[in-house]
Length: 565
Ligand code: NAD
Image (cartoon, rainbow, N blue to C red):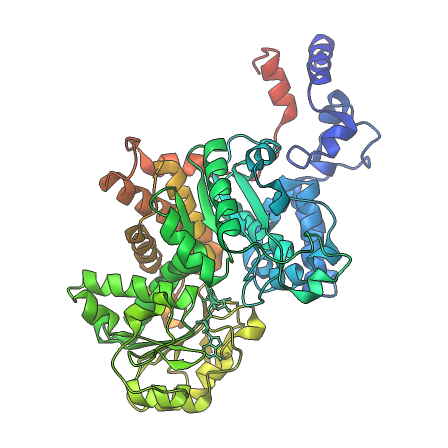
């Protein structure tokens, strides 16, 4: 660099983010990767160890640190600290090691992190909106530093995974989900906003824990709660026009109601209900391909009739309607078993969301007996009740179906209805298995089985990208079917040969961009947006995807002072 140019660049840099401030800015920090010229012009000389390490070396150091940690919670804390320090490096590491790190930044480890959130808390991330903010939620939202927010993930912490009411400690969930939006589909981190609505908690331990991070009072209920959510929905959509609001881990007595109330008013969806339904439908479609038995000939028994189960039931029913069945016929293929037993017409204790699936049959309170009675070809565990699928149940299914579908979707791993190994060994390898949290590969009599993980992260990031690119104003149920079919189409024959009914996680960015494409096409075709379709939608999607790469500050500064290289 000539002396003149050097002086100009230094002068220009004087007004830019520099020195210690730059090192403490996670969005722009490059740590030891700042080049010697950048260190001169950005006032970093002496503030960093002399040796320059490029990103590859930094990744090596991070992975070395992660792998020597004693447990996954420590790994979670380490990764959160990296996210707070150097966002670019954090996302590069997560993307490059997604299979290894997804179970740390999301389920199952995020569950433990939420259970101990107040105890491992270091730095705040996202927004906390408390009951005491009622009447001024709009003002709280103004404190968020970014204006171009496109995706909000919001929880009130009442039903975190299968772990119950964790109040404000549930913040780990929106943070984790949004990290996956970025890692899996390249949504720019600046466009993501995690929010916890601290409306209180009924969790006695938290109410008496001095390190709990939320307000220690019982939950808002009834009208007070509804008014609070109403104010939030109005304020968030006004502050960030066009934003997508993803509801996450609300208890089912609120989740179904709020979805019904807001789905036609705002661009919103509930991932526990609709995202789960979409990924599970994709899994069922792949399992059907593997089993050779068409969907219309499957008989599905859901163990658990909450947000996940009922959501899946509706989406499978609408898929069957698309195959020519009447709605009644379609629903008759989906049976439910809840904490009181088989969901049948004669029961008088059923809440509204279960009624469409209450069929004519005798009441059964034992799951094995229910299986004998209705002879399901697929059992889908969404109960949060661990070890409730048994050898006897799977053996019973084998008496009438060649390839039983066994999905044990309860999270985290400790809540799974059965393990992958159990499902494969009980069925001598005939079961088609998927779980909610990851299980290791199983070797059985010389054959390798790769258990599928019905991870919602296969759907919501791609769907979010499709929404952003298309400018869709609503998320209709049909769009979840589109996303499910898109995902199922991306399962190759070689995946199926291994028993894997979802694409390999390593392909997730490619998979998400295809889902975004299919989703956006459907939005444009059905005129669910005011935008016109771009000439090259694929290119538009590619360009919209954030790639974690370091900025060349020198080039930027030269450009700012009008120097052409
Ligand atoms: P929920 O609280 O809405 O529903 C739970 C249901 O299980 C209720 O219908 C309840 O009656 C039933 N249940 C409870 N105890 C039972 C028992 N002993 N026998 C039979 N049924 C019983 O919760 P949800 O959102 O539906 O989630 C349920 C589980 O599914 C959780 O563990 C969650 O982690 C998991 N899940 C997995 C995925 C996924 O794999 N992608 C997605 C969402 C939820």
